[in-house]
Length: 299
Figure 1: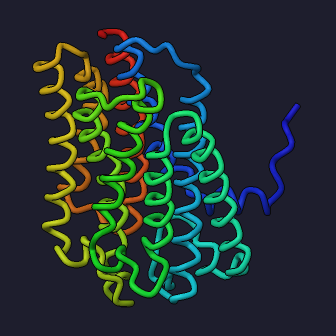
Figure 2 (figure 1 turned 90 degrees about the vertical axis):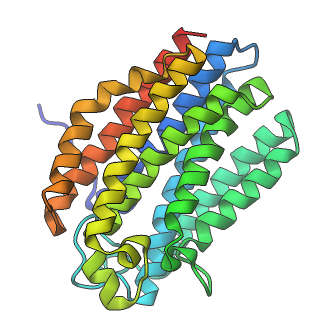
C-alpha cells in the first residue's frame, strides 16, 4: 500500500527551504557535541538539541530570506538553474516568503535566548549577530552577499560559531579541539556555497550580483573549491596528529571528495553542477558525522 504524498504546497515550501544545504547546520552541532563528549559532559543533553534547532532554523531562515531578497531584486532570473526559487519563479508571494523567513528567525532567536538564559548572556550577543548576518546576507540596502563576502559569513557562522558554540553550551568553556575542527567544518560549509555560486556565475554576472565566484571568475573559483576540500581534510588530519583526537575519521568522505573535485576540475557547469552540490553536501555530512564520532570516542 502506497503512502500518501505530501500536498503540493508543502512540497513546494520544503523545496524552497533547500534541504540539500541542511548539512551545513547539522554538521557543526554534531562536531561540537562530539568534542564535548570527548571532554566529558555533565550538563543536560537538551542543550545540544536546542543548539541543533537554532542551527537548522537559522539555515532555513537564511534560505527563505535569500529567496525573498533575490526575488524582489530581480536577481533570480530565467537563466538560473538549481533549487526552486519561490519568489523569482512566481510560485509564492514575496510577503509569504518573507513571513516564512521571519518565523524561522524568530524560532532560532527564541530557542537561542533560552540557551542564553541558562548558559550566559554572551550567547545573546552571538545570537543577535547571527540573526543580523543571516538577514543582511542578501537583504537590506547593502547586502554583503552581493559584495563577494558571503563565504566569510558562512565560514564564521556555520563553521566557527556553530561548532565552538555547541561545545560551549555543553562545557561552558571554549575548547581548543572544537575550535580547530571548526575550521574544517567551516571549509566544508563554504565549499557548498562556492560550488553553488560557481553554477550561478552566468546569471549573477548578468544581474550584477558580484559574488566571490563572479569576482574571481570561473577558473579561479574552481581552484578555490578544490583547495577548500583538500584543506578541510588536511586540517582534520593535523588535529589528530597534534591532539590525539580522531578528527581524521572524516577521511571516510574521501571517495566523495575525489568525485566532487574531479567533476569541478573537468569543467562541469550549469545544471551539471547540481549533482556536485549534492555530493558536496554528502561530503560535509559523512565527513562531519565521522569526525564527531571520532572526537567523542577518543577523549
